[in-house]
Image (cartoon, rainbow, N blue to C red; front, side, top):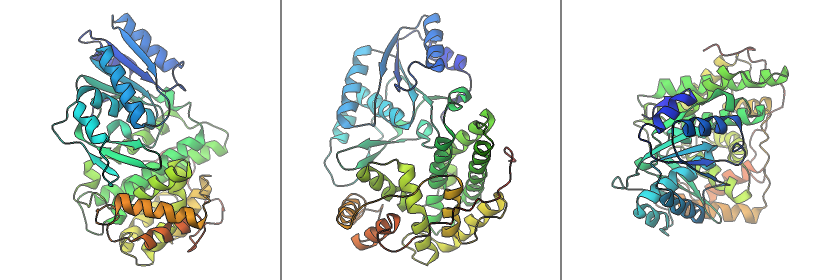
Length: 407
């Protein structure tokens, strides 16, 4: 388990222990911010040489290789990455490639699968420390990273991608606008609930998964109420969301389940890439029709009894004001949180996205196993309001409990 620190000074002490240079990778949005300045100043006072570089955009193969080459040249004993999920993914991939050229060969592989698995023999040198400045991705404690391509993203998995240290800083999170906080809660909720609903077999982490989903829903409403009152989410609330977001990656929640049960994740990934939108927008568009299919008894998408059980806990945690039907209810929740689910794509484009999704994740591969092109296209059509209708909600405000965390 990756150690989580809560004070910049604690991270500075860890990184300065052996006196080797530190490669500091920062998102341009935070490069000139107070936290980066404090980390830089603390390392310099400790006698540590810093090799700094601003890192832009998503993790593309050419960018990862360029960054890996730069890291080799720094001869740094540690990499410190400060930024959102896209930057952390770049830092994780580049640090592994800098240490082991075999990792690059795997990233260059041209197989049709959207999943790239790095073998256990691939190792990373030195320390990788990360400071997430956004909520939702949980990349800081994950063994995965997204690698963007021309028309899709691939998921790269491997033990070498797991960071060694995490600094969770409340001050940097308070700079996030409330709508990005709510989107972060939604992404963590989606990640926690997808495997639980998608796999109908009971697992040891079922009760904990339901509890995490309920807490996240409650916290999302707490953020919404704070914004309605003209207040920023308090640091304690943001840290609670960050902890639960990270926890949604833990094996304790997902152990014993089909590792590819969260089929909505693969579609959200491809839909957001193809339409050039944020993943949370694709998640919001997919959830109502996805849950409609589940509650209608289509077991290819999930287990209706498990979804009903989970949604009952969410309703109880948010004051029992959300509709009892899960699909209608999640649409209401999205409307309450002001997360816009609208996506637009014509029939031909949806057909192309569906074909690429089945090619990368289905057709004998387990991620979309049992789903043919038509089933995937129908789901995408429902998400973009081009086919089978999904529930869109009323936009009426739910009277969820006000105030801060109660859990």
